[in-house]
Length: 247
Image (cartoon, rainbow, N blue to C red; front, side, top):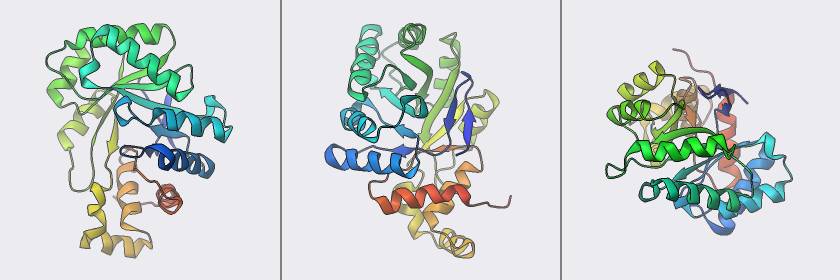
């Protein structure tokens, strides 16, 4: 699978499994199925309340930890120094791992200085509990402030991005500053299936509109983390890697 080199020096698979709103047995089964199908990138967050399910699925899969890329996030109300350290510890325990590949600020919080949050991130990186750091749902002003608030490279910005929400200005800013863009809700909450334009192009390409949307994003070097809980959708999303679009 194609990977994107992060500014931190580590690489992230361009396609991952999103797990928002998927918990319990459904989450366990989805992650285990995805791993068995060849996924190596799993995205979660402390607020999703499914890290424990994901950790169990990883153990059940028998796949070496070093072969996987795990992203989790610190909730916006937990961005004080000590809270960040504690939240990360809890995530590590639930995911049954010694380190997080990518730790993100889930949402900005204007009442907590970014400097304080990043001081905690720097401590976690020093202790090798976190490899890369980043942000989520950050606008350009947020990103400008973040770049001034830490000596660590801001490796990624996870934002909503799909054919109906093309955040060109944020994408251009991130590309200029070597910040990888991770697209959540890349299928526009299912809206891609209703688009006549996407259905027409997908028909020409002999693929699904969802696969077309993912291929369109990945061809822009945008990392995608579509949520899927059935084997059919998990495999379908994986097949989007083989679709090539012209400019």
